[in-house]
Amino acid sequence: MSNRNNQANKAAARERIRAERERQKKKEKLRRQLVVAGTVAGVLVVAGGAGFMVMKANEPKGWEAAKEAKPVAPANTQGKNGTEILIGDKNAKETLEVFEDIRCPACASFEQSSGEALLKDVKDGRYRVRFSMYTFIDDSPAGGEGSKNALSALGAALNVSPEAFLKYKTALYSAKYHPEEQVDSYGKDSELLKVAATVPALKGNKAFETAVKKGTYDRWAMDMTALFGRKGIKQTPSFMHGDKKLVMPQVPQRQMTQAQYNQLAQANFKKMIDTEFGPAKESGKPDPGKGGSKDEGGSKGIREGEKDPSASR
Image (cartoon, rainbow, N blue to C red; front, top):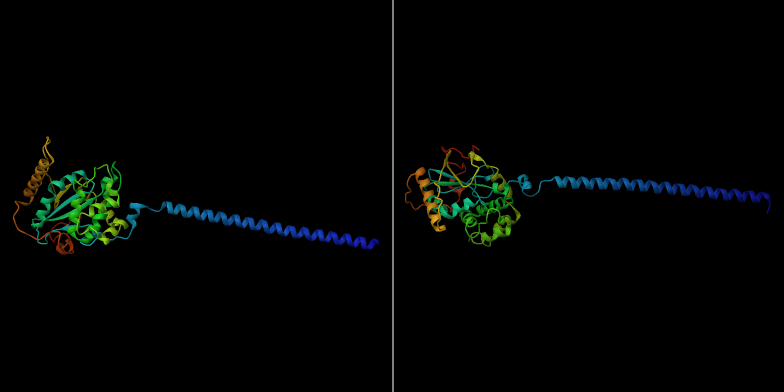
């Protein structure tokens, strides 16, 4: 081989080596660029995911979320966000306000002893009744959410009719179903539906059951309980006539049967009502549960000339 050919071959070999090195450098550069781009994208995805998770974690949940939900008031209600539950004869001259909490054991005791007497007065047109339902026991050391959940279910019953509301409330307070204060049975929809099955208008009522399960009236329940402390009332059961808080005589502390206690408690309730409204008169008015508070009370809620009890807290 001539010297010239040998030099040409060496030059060609060096050129091939140089070209291969350039190709490898470009390949490595591209690989690094892809790695960096992938890392940045991964960081952005992780950061975005973390941000989304933080955002979701900070969103209100449960009953806190219910406060922000769109207001849906049951039928047969009045006032702002439907927070006036007025039931009774439109011709009744007076309004008795009753403040209760479904989990309240004293409220259950009152309903079991005197609830029937109260409803008879309403039926006879002696007075209308405005129920203010609170849920403060859920926030007490007892904890839970049974007061709010039961109030939401009562809203679903009220949407059916005032009669269904009254009968369901009576059933929830009954000795058969009402739990001890420390037991949050009414926090479960299944328990509320079991009690509702004893009310003819609610048994098998799919619309009612759906409203309970979906929490249709959860926001309404929160709006109702936001009135806690209205007119200075912070304990249940309490009773007011206008701006006057009514005081019921206490049942003497002595050993007695449940029937004897109920008899004395009802007598004390009647005494309180007679003192405030005068002796009862027989009249045969229509059932307060029929017709509804909206039809009977009018769109203004509290009767004209009578101080609106929602005006003061």
